[in-house]
Length: 244
Image (cartoon, rainbow, N blue to C red; front, side, top):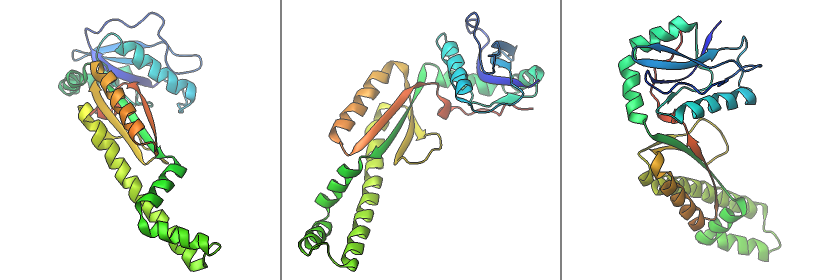
C-alpha cells in the first residue's frame, strides 16, 4: 500500500494529537516516520486517491493540527511514496535540504490574495478616464445609438480600457501588499482572476497585512478582493518530490 505524505517536521516535534485522522473513507490514522533527524507525517493512502472535498479538508486539517505545535514543511495534496521505507530514504538523502526549509519557514504563514473587478465600477472608471470613450458614448447616445462602426469602435475602446485597467490594478495590488510580506509569488493555478498572489509573512504580522488589504480595498472600490489564510506556506516550499 502506498504511503501518503502530509508534511515534514523536525524529529523532536511534539507528538501527534491523539486520534488524528487523515484522508480516506473511513479516515486513515496519521502517524510519523523518523529518519535523518526529521519526521514525515503520513498515513496509508486509499487505493484510489482523488481530490475529493473531504480528503482535501482532511489534508489541510492534519497540517493545521501538526503546525499548531511547531514548524511543518507542508506538501501539497496527493504527495505519495511507494511505502514507508521509501519515505525514510527520501528523508535521509535530503535531510539537510528539508532542515534548511524548516528553519526558513518556521513561524511563517501564507495568505493567498485574489481579486476581480466589479464590472459596473470598472466600466465607470474607463469612461471617466478616457476622453475618447466619453465623447463617443455621448455621440452615440445623442444619435439614438450610433452607427454599427461607431458601436464597434466604442466596444474596442472600452475593451482596451478594461484590459489596461486590469494590468494597472494587478500591479497596484502587488505594490501595496508586497512591503507587508517577506516574499510573494503567483498563487495556485486558477482562472477568472486578475490577481492571484500568495504572500509569505511572519505569523505575528498577519494583522498588519490584513489591515493593508482592508485599506487598499477601501481605496479601490472597483476591486473585489479575497484573502485566504493563514495557510501552511505551500507556495514557498522547495521540496524533493517524495516518491519512489
